[in-house]
Structure formats: C-alpha cells, structure tokens
Length: 136
Length: 329
Image (cartoon, rainbow over all chains, first blue to last red; front, side):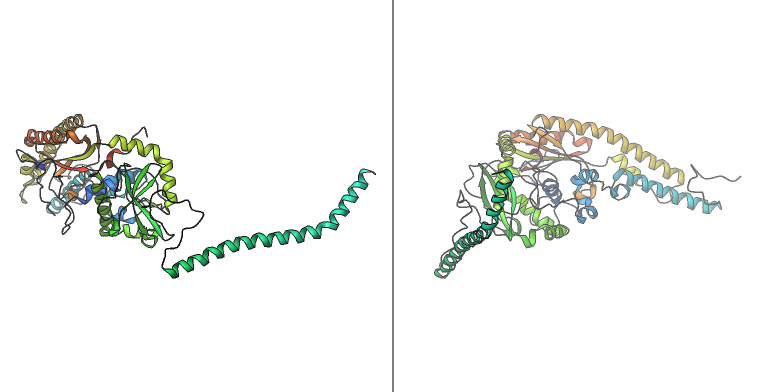
C-alpha cells in the first residue's frame, strides 16, 4: 500500500496551503473517505489523553487485537512492554535491526551450505564460528 | 428493701410487660411499612394516570433536580461515553455525530462541561466493548468518531481529550468524577487555551550508496556478496549517525518554536505506507498565533535537509492529546 504524498509533505519548495487548511497525512485504510492516518489517530486516542479511569474497566492492552496486530499500534508498544507483552522482540518481521541481522544470517548460512555442497564438504555444526573448513 | 429484692421486682415487672412491648412494636412496624408502601402506591398511581393522559412521568422524588435542562436522564441500560472536557463557555455541543452516530451532548457539573453520548450497555458494557475492539474495523470506527467529535469541539475552544472508551454507568458517577478531578481538568483547560497540537514526522530516504549496494547480481561470488553486504551495512550505519544528528537538530529547532514538545516512537515501516524509515515522530504544542510561523519553520527545515535525504510531514491541528498529562499533575 503506497500512501499518496499529501500536499503537506515538505520537501524542497513544495508549498503548503493557507493557514486554515488542516494538513493531514494520508495513510488510512483503502476506501476510507477520511484521509487522516489511522495510526496517527490510534496512537493518540489509545495511548494519550487524560488518564482518568471510567466505570467500565477496559484495559486496552488486554485485548487480543493488540497482541496480534500490535504492529498497527506502535505508540502502545512501550506500554505493552511495561506489562510484559513483548513477543514481537523475537519476531523478526517487526524489528528493523533484528530483521536485518536475522535475514543476513539466514542468507549467509544458505550460501555456506551451498558452497560446502559444491566443494563436497561436511555441513558445519551450528556453533562452528567463521567460515568453511578447507580441505587441502 | 435489699438490692436483690429490687432486682427481682424489676425483672418480674419486665416479664409482665414484655408481651405488651412486642405487641406495640409489631403495630409500629405495620404502621411504618404501611406508610412506605402507601408512598410507593401513590407514585405508581400518578405515573400510570399521567402516562394515560400522555404526559411524561415525573422524576424520582429522591433525585436532586438537574441543574441544566440538557442533562440526559440515563436509564440503567445506558452508559455515558465521554469524549473530553471543554470550557464552560461552550453553549452548544459540537455539531457532529459521535460513536455509532449517537448525538453528542453537554454534561455540566462542578463548573466543568463534558462532551458525552449516551450509549447502550448492551453494546458498550465491558464484554461487548472488548469484543468489538478485537475487530479492527470496529476499532477504527470508534476511534475516528471519537476523534472527529474532539476535532469539531476544538473549533470552539480548548478541549481536554479523554482516552478512548472512558465510560460512566450513570450521570451521578460522571458528576462524581468531574467534582473530584475539577482542579486537574480546570488547570489543563487553562494551559491548553489558545493552543494547538501539531504533529511532525521525518522520513529518511535510502541514500544512493545503499541502493547501489543492494543491486547485487545473483551470480556474485561469495566474497563479492559479503563485501556488498558489508558496504551496505557501513553505509547504513554512517547514514544513521548523520541522520540522528539532523533529526535532533530539527526537533530542537521546532521545540524552540513551541510551548511544549513530546517525542513518540516512530511507526513501523509498513505502517506508514512509505518506502522510507520514519526517523522522527513528534508532537508540538503551538499557540494559535504562532502556527503560521511554525509551519514556515517546518517548510524551511524540510528544504534545508532535503539533501540529507530527510523528508518532513506535518499534520494538524490536533486536540492536544499529547499535552494533557504533565509530570506535576
């Protein structure tokens, strides 16, 4: 999903409309008339605002939606971690740096095993550091 | 007469009169019960007659008369959804439907004015609401409606936004909260008067060197492959350091132009829909009179850092969600 870049994207000399037009980023779900990004709204109404408990105790972080679809509620991640919900830390699809590393490791391992096959070497043990054992 | 004699006399007297006492107590109980029942019968009779005549039933006698006529009379099946609190000078509710297209009303108490909608317990009680929130479409609808009411209210003055799903089981419970929280709410309203929240995000376009390193031919040798990967990693690291400095500079400059600033965690790449990494996600509290200057500063910073691969995005005005809780309060 590529979001259209709104007029409010500031780059180079692009103009911003007059003072009374609210600038919004688009990025809402396809088909929605309101172009305000859902992520922008959710991070505000779920995680910010006045902290006064109502009568109905809805713990927004208990809701299963948030543990499964937490990628949509990035602002609540810190809150979730406070509560011990951090399953995504081992989920390589969510953490940029870790994803890169995991990806790199996977690619390297694949290449190593292909190389070793070609050279007729034994498959290395998982703990074996560094490269391939060369045969004379 | 001895002490013992006196005791015996008193005991015998009491024994003799006990049945009399019991009888009187019973009679008294009957009388009191009768009185209470009579009062209830009277009320019921009048209600029935009034209904027959087409008039609205009179309210419970124990309840204090509402201070303002626009307070909704909640039944036990209804809950009050609170959007936020506004200054007392708001004479009318915002012209905007609320959650589930329900009407939005003003609820006044203790000099505070809350924006509320009456909602059915059947759909907004704890279990029902929790179930609804599991569905992203339903969550989106509630969130957008809640925010839209606050946006509309903002046009008439400061609004203190409440978190989504703040519900009270009766007008009295809401009153109790408003009375209790009055000092905090009043102070927050004062602080937000004449201010707007504006959001600024910064995105980092991948630099040319990184893009080049990514274009690895599938037949590249192992060495080439590893060295390209290393190049990319180094380029990314260098870029990251430089970007951090740029972003810190942008945030500092914008914070100078604002009364307050809050940093939030950047969104995941997939979420923004852009093929770029979000490197800044911040909210700034700007006085209305300073908004033009603020926007112009954002534009200038965008131009200045275009060469660094940084793109700025401005959203607003928002109700001041990020600025209602302060460490002192």
